[in-house]
Image (cartoon, rainbow, N blue to C red; front, side, top):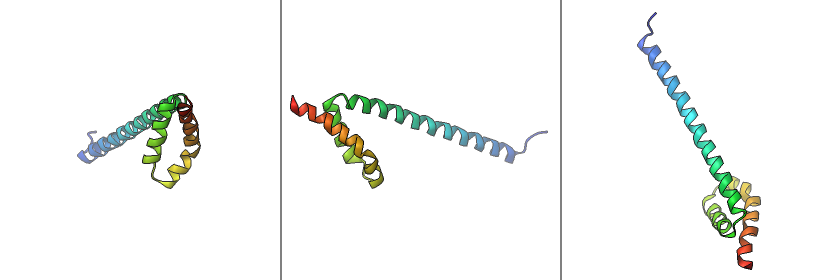
Length: 86
């Protein structure tokens, strides 16, 4: 039996929704990977640590985000301080 136009539209819209969900998941995964790599490098390199801490302080404007970053910022500040000692 042939599908109606409305059925074809619904099917196409459902497929589009699935593709958008997949795209969002891919973008989120990419952000997680990049964030993990940059964080690991920053915790080993004082110059990058200083840059990352400053960038996070400047751009994390929501209070809930700032609270989440407290521990990381402390670690980054400790690493950045190593550059001042040399």
